[in-house]
Structure formats: C-alpha cells, structure tokens
Length: 239
Image (cartoon, rainbow, N blue to C red; front, side, top):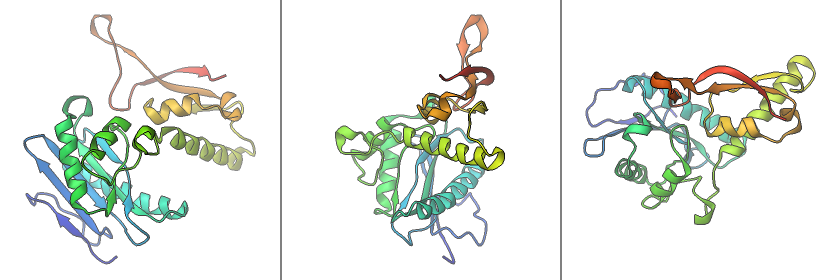
C-alpha cells in the first residue's frame, strides 16, 4: 500500500505523509453530534475488521493517532489468527455516557454503509452489544451482534481469555511458571476487565487481582472514573 485516501469534509486534520492506510474517513454530523474517524489499514486479505471505540478524546488529532495505531494492529492480529480479513478501526469522539444516542449510532451506521463492506465494525471500549444490534438494523457490516439475531454475541469473554493466555505465556517465559501466586493488575473494570477478573481458568483462580474500586465522592456518594478508570487500591483472591 503506497498511499491513502482521506475524506475530511472540513479539511482540518493532517495525516502524516507516508501513512500506509488505504482509507481514512473523518465524519461530523451536527444534528446527532457524531464525530468519528474510520481508518482502513488493509483489505489485502479481505474486508477490514475492527471495533468502534467511543472515547472522550481531548481533540481530534489524538483520536486520529489512536485510530491509525489500532487499525494497523488489527491487520497484524487478523493475519496472525489466519483470518480472511485486514485491519480497520473506528473511533467516535465523546463521552458515551453523555452523547451516545440512537440517532448518533444510526449516523455512524450510515458512514459504515458508505464504505460498501470494506470495513466491518464491532464492539470496543465505550460500545456494547446492544449498540451493535442497533447499528445492524441499518448496516449489515457489523460483528458481535446478539446470538438471538444470528450474531456471535459479546466478544468480551474471548478477549479476556486471550489476555489471560498471553499473561500465562509471559509469566512462563519470565519466571518459568504460570500465574500461580502472582499479583495481577486489572487497570480497567470494563467488560473485558470484568471477564478477566472472573475467568475460571485454574491459574487465574490462584492469582490475586488488583482492580479499581468506587471512590468516595461529595456527600458520601461513590463514583467511578470513566470510561475505564478508577482507583487501583483493592486486592482480592479470585478463588
């Protein structure tokens, strides 16, 4: 891939020269408040595949950097897994707890549709299986929809299992043993973090986990940092 196409209606973002991405689509929809970037890194082996990350980036330049990095990594992941897919990724800018609406997700679905199957979206940080079901109502290029709708379901358990297996391999290489007796930091208690924390793998049952706990707010109320934060203060045995 020697070049890339950038679709930016306002022309306010610069993409580093020499980027190996095939397509970068920057979208803003005033009515719904959608601000999104979709990056297609490669379709050499098949349609690009990658989740839609909904995150309150400080600015669009940071969002662009993230989507380029993540889509590039998805190409490598798909190739290593032997999938007939390339790498793609989408980022939606904003706090999903505040700005995410059905209208915004439908506008995002329209952007995905406009790529004519070259990008398949899925769940990621800040998006849910329910969101994918809604997007799938108007866009067929979606993975991770509900099993009741013929989809593959929530990908979090598979993601968590992959993380645990990788940690076990790293521990075996570093110490010559698995995770038995080790302390594991879970830096986010989102869907993947919860699945990692509750995994039933034998080695994981004998580890200690550190994870974010509710913080005491004003008036005695508890709160969590969003979207995947929290104070990493507690430890507990997962047995």
